[in-house]
Image (tube, rainbow, N blue to C red; front, side, top):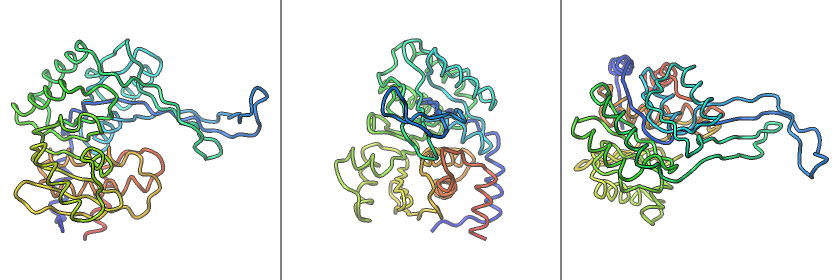
Length: 331
């Protein structure tokens, strides 16, 4: 059981402010078309959506960067967008939120990764994905690496946010981790299925149950299954810590030579789990950058996930709401 005093929470809350976190990975744009269906098209037996509202939000690694911002930090996103209308919208959102865009490289050979959701009468009807999953070329990788090198001395941590959309190539992953380790910079990873074991020698590796089951070729059902999986990941990746997220089962934290610690989920009501993983890695990383130990940071990240799961849609965690919730529950 992890306990944090009111004094310590106040210290951490203050220390979140101004922490500079580089977020490297698959930048995405989430689009929404909301409206009503009142008739069937005369052209085909399909419903006609009368659009009442259209808006765009950050998705993928960009949502992680946005979470860093709402937690009081300074996000430095590093990734790729296309030379297209969605790229223009993405750039305008960065400007609107006053998030740095000098780490965003335009690649004319690929589209801006965009997921457009069509919602009719409050019912999610279809999602339209526009993306390329092919790896970025060497020229683009070099631009991303050069930008990271230019800011290495000015950052407090790095998040590698992988959605398998082609930005984090094996060679780029290796280069980033090597650069960070030479400067003793915190590196946390939110992996997907591909490249899973490329993320060796990082500070924290944070997979979920499904990803771990798929890569290890096993089922994680019992407490002993969780223990075995966590220890195997620590061994294979040589990471300092492994944080295994288990959905309704909460999280399990593993450290070499130490007994694992479990934390039950803090979600009181689950309206939508979308974006919860983004919130966990954001809160965990800024917490560690703010001098929290792994258990304090995991404790706060667990609460943050519980808060956003109670909201509909992908929403960032607000620092005030996070600490208010933790204080209310623990004092």
